Amino acid sequence: MKLFKDKIQEAYEPKLNNQTVLHFRQLVSYIDSAISDTFKKSGDDRAQALVTHLLSIRDYLSQNISENGLRVVLLNEALNIISELEKPQLEEDDKKKEEDLIETESSQEIDLDKDL
Image (cartoon, rainbow, N blue to C red; front, side, top):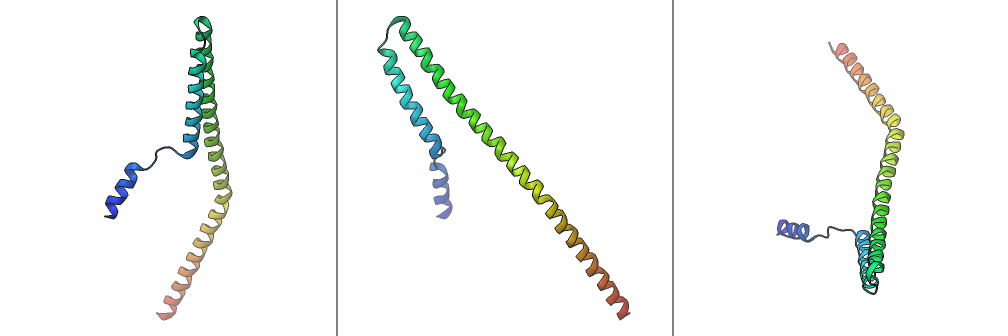
């Protein structure tokens, strides 16, 4: 039953996070008002309004894409900095473990020599 429950949960799990849904709702609301505004106009004014609204949507989407890309770059940089800061500590820990292992092996060899 657990496998069945997990499969159902996986199949119906939301694919969009709350932030994305909020952005989509704002975009839908803007498009609705843009369509309403465009239909109130006629001729060249209608065409100009339509182009203006499409360019606004394009700018909004481009801005969000750029912001997301910047966040990814900043996150990767921060993780790289943390890895670099951890690296000397990890190397020191590895060196200490290696020294301890050599010391343990040496003491075991000495004990074996005494037994013989």
